Image (tube, rainbow, N blue to C red; front, side, top):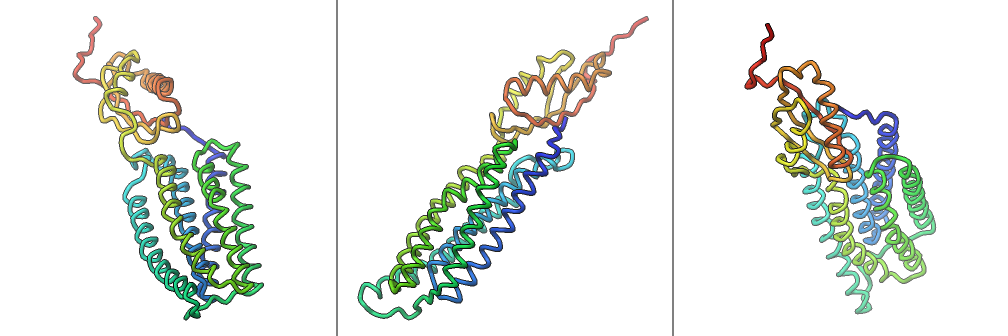
Length: 303
């Protein structure tokens, strides 16, 4: 029995897709502006935007997963999501260490009073552009967060929360740009070092809060599900039980029922009763139930 989320699911998908495109545009502008101005601060900030892109992609996966046909694809993260997390970790590690080494070298030169070999060139136009990007990102996150209060999706709530929680880092980046424009060039490597260190915490927070929505490990022990299911009249046994998700948020369950031959004509009703029993025990449940006749039970003959 597949629960049709209808319009709310489409709204969640569109909001998250809008956030994804906005973050990709902001990422492109930050990398281009950082490279053109030789500012390690902007390049370090772009790493946080990469995490925002990954966070939004995870939420899109969580929203789209229940729509996979016939439930054959497990509701949960698979090779794609695991590979994405590993690729992101490699990107953050490589570019983070590279930017950190450059920032440390520039900061050491600033402490010694030596001129930086690659001084940042900050202009008023650059500050205005970055301020506009930060304003767009925060406004969009506030909009999605507001809409998320009326939508039955944890993914739509977590993604803007992550962007808003790290909003103060963007503010620190803007203050650093203002300081560099006024001649305090040592702020560029100092802010970059702080941003790179906080990147690790931000990445861990995304994995710790959003991946549980996509957990592949079994959410409920098959024995516990079987015990609940077999209490429904007409069910003789159930097997091939799989469950994914988090109990209390959303659990996807697939199982095969063996029904007594005398109850086979009530297969649909029995399936609905089983789903209702599972929902009473475990909260929000999206169940895929297959019903078949139990051939081990002899059919009663009436003469």
